Image (tube, rainbow over all chains, first blue to last red; front, side, top):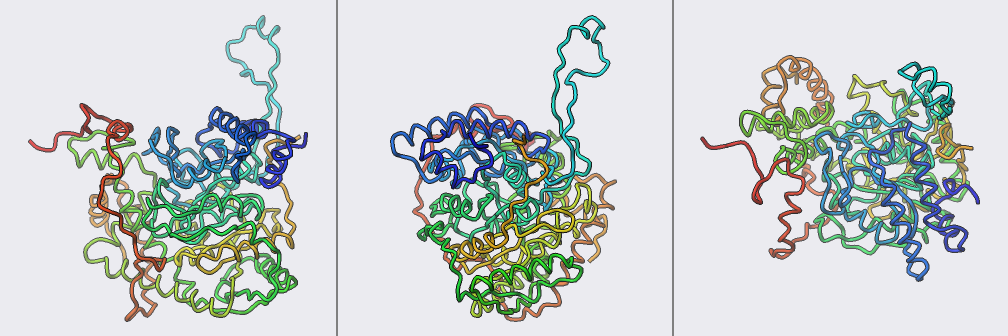
Length: 523
Length: 95
C-alpha cells in the first residue's frame, strides 16, 4: 500500500471511494504518525481512541452510501476550538483541564461532514503570538528544523540495574530526534502548521486574528486560508479579538483548502456576526483560468529591510500570474504602515474584555486569596503567561478613562482608513498579491525579548485582517537558508472563490514539493 | 507615553492581575515601548473619519428574547473549581 500519510485529502477520498483502503487504515497510519512526531510537541492532547471510533463510523457511512465531503479524513484541531468532552486549553494554564460540554460550530460542521479528530494541537497562549513560543505547553518545533535521527537504548544508563539483570536484559532501541537548531513553526496556529507539514495530520483547523493561519503556513510550506470575516462561525472558539478572529483550514494543497473551507463555513444563528449567505462550491472555483484578471501589487509592501530574495519571489509570483494571462497593476494602500499599530491597540482592547471571564469562578484555574478580588488577581497572575498579561494590560490601558479617545477611538478611525484603502484598490484590481511574511522562520528563543520585533512578523497579514478580507498563503519556494516562503493572495469580501482560483494557479506554477527534514512516517 | 510604576500598578489592578512590585519597573518599560510604537497613529489625519464599529457591512441580527436552552445545571457547573448544592462557591464577599 502507498504511504497513506503522504496523500492529499483529495487523493485519500478517491482512494477510499475506490475501496483501496478504509478510513480506519488511513486513521491508524496517522495515529502512528502523531506518536512518531512527539519530538515536535505539536499536540497538546492526542485522541487516538476517538479517532479510530470516528473512522469506524465514517467507514460505515461510506458503506451505506452516506459519505460526507470530508468522510474519513483524519485532521488535527487547534486547541482553541471547544470540543465536547475533550480538554480545550487555548494554550493556557488558566484553562488546563477544561472540558467543554459543547462543541464549536466549525468542528461540528467538520464532524457532520465525516472528518476524524486526531487530537488537539498546540498554539500560542490564547492565540497571541507569531511563533508558538508563548504556549503554556511549550514551544512547537518546526519540522523544518535541523536535526538527526539517533538510535539509543531505552534503558537508563547506570541506574540500579545489577550486572546480572543487565546481562539478560534485551536491548530496547528507540529512535529519537536530536535537534541542532530548533526553528519556530510560526504562530499562533503553530501546532496545526507543524502537524500538517510533518504529515501527521492531513489538515488542521487554524484561526487567524492578525495572520495566525497565513504566517505559520508560510513558515512551514503549506497552504492556509483565512476567509472573510463572518464566513466561519466563531461560536465555541475561545475568543481573542472578536472583531478580527476567523477560523480557516490549513492544508497541503489549494484543492484541499477549498474542500475543507466548504465544510467549515456556513451561517450560524449562534454567532451574531455570522453571515447568512450561501457557501459557494469552492472546489468548482479551481478552474485554473485567470485570464484577464487584474492582480494588484501594493507598492507600500516593499518595506525597508525586506530580504532581497523575498522581493525576488514576489516578482516571480507576478511573472507566474502574468504568464497565466492575468494583468498586474500597481496599486496603493497608503495606510499600510499604520496597520500594525492599529492592530496592537484594537486586538489588546478586545482581548482585555474577552479574557475578563477568566476569573477562577466558573471554570479553569483558581488560586485562593484573602477575598474575592484577591482571588481574581491571584488566579489571573498565575493563570496567564507574560504575553497575555502584557496584552490585557495594554488593552485595559487604552480603554481606560482619559485614554479611550486618544488610543482606542483613534485606532478604530485608522482602521476605517485602512478598509477604505482596500475598497479603493479593488476598484482597480480583482485580487492583491503580496509576500506572506517578511522573513523565513527564525529560531526558538530569537526575538523573545523584543515584543515589537515579534509583532513585525505580521506586517503583511494584519492589514487584510483589519479590513476583514479573505487571504491565503501558498508555498512558493525555498529561500537560500533552505526554508519555505509563501506568497499571499487577498481578495474582495466573500470572494474566496477568486482567491482560491488564483492560489491554484500560483500553486501549479510554483510546483512546491519540498519536504521538511522531519517527516513523521519517514522510511 | 512613558508609564511609571504607579500607573502600571493601577492598570494591573484594573485588569485584576497581581503584579509584584519587583516586576513593575520592567513591565513599565515594556508597556511604554508598545505605547510609543502605537503612537505613530497620531500622524494620521482622522478628522471626520467614522471609527469602525463593524468590519462587515452587516447589521447585527437579533433573535427573539426567548429561552433556547436550559435545564443544564450540571453541564454549567461541570468545570467549576468549586461548587456546592448547584451553585458556584467563591470566598465570602460580605462580612
